[in-house]
Amino acid sequence: MKDGHIHTPYCPHGSKDVFKSYIEQAISSGYKSMTFTEHAPLPESFQDPVPDKDSAMDIRDVDQYISDLQELKKEYKKDLSILIGFEVDYIRGYENETKHFLDDYGPYLDDGILSVHFLEGNKAWYCLDFSPSMFQEATEDFGSIDRIYNAYFDHVTSSIQCDLGPFKPNRIGHMTLIRKFHELYPSPPNWERLATQVLQAAKHHGMELDYNGAGTKKPHCNETYPTKSIAEHAIAMEIPLVYGSDAHHSLGIKQGYDKLSSKFFKS
Image 1 (tube, rainbow, N blue to C red):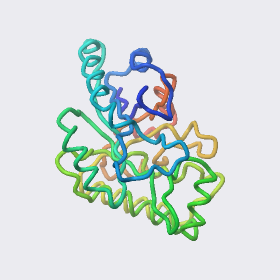
Image 2 (tube, one colour; image 1 turned 135 degrees about the vertical axis):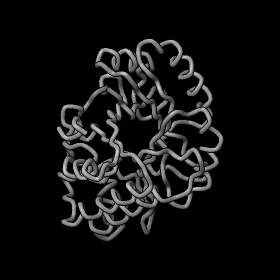
Image 3 (spheres, one colour; image 1 turned 60 degrees about the vertical axis):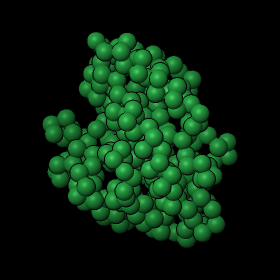
Image 4 (tube, rainbow, N blue to C red; image 1 turned 30 degrees about the horizontal axis):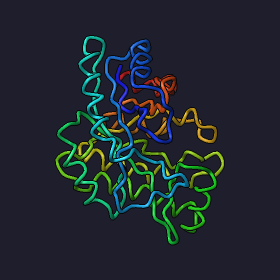
């Protein structure tokens, strides 16, 4: 079993559970491989829109993060494969800074995820998954639920198509994250068509999808990212899916695994 999306004590909005607590939990859960994918530092010129400015790790901690994981890889090599990665944000307009970060640290990485969390509206930037109130504010700024969904999936498609250099992550994170609050703010009728366009781009560019269990634990979501129907469409298109717990604490290891489509286990 592989988990390709796990956070760490370096996450400022996560827990302080130490690396070994995640690893021991993974071993007891039957893992054979796990990728630590801490939120990569945001571009220096980008202003984090969340109140506590805690969306990503500090650039000053990156070297130690990599060093810690290099040691743990050796220590646990007989138990399971530990991969070093980042969850990198695709932020439109900041591609060059993101590419420079990847050029600097890519040689030390084994794996990675490319995600969209941030959208720029008419008035401000928003973190789409931060809170229901921020999502509502963003939707009002964009003008409608249709427009914000269009913008989100357009950004995800752009993340697939953009050139971030040779160390660009090859897996798209939680591609239906915009549905995190869908029980409060219902998705527009055409949202699955928009998601299918993302699948077509992923297929064309040979990218994987993060099959993320975290949404099953979110009170206004209660589903995987992507949803079962979109995941099964991806499987039918022969797009590789990689399970990701998106754990931000050690007990989040394996979350949502029991909610994945049965077709995933047969693919």
